[in-house]
Image (tube, rainbow, N blue to C red; front, top):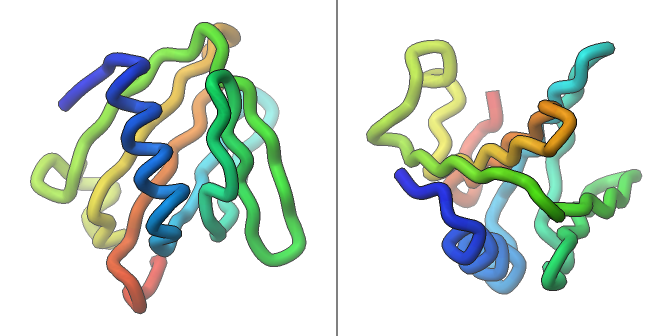
Length: 108
């Protein structure tokens, strides 16, 4: 839906303030992983993600952003039943997808 850095940071600050249920999916050439938690802090260049047993600070310098919501869910993700997704593509090509879920919803 959008791809501007300003809009992405506005959404990240909203998630930081509201603390909805979140899942973070990291895709790297050598592997991938999923974490559940919240957006703990947003600065002008980084986000801090935090959950049970982890804390991750991610630089967003020169990253690209893509947003979609549940109305645009790709078939492969429909069972996740998320509200919104922000996909961050880093200069290296690695990706981080941040999913917002309804409170109390299962995170399949």
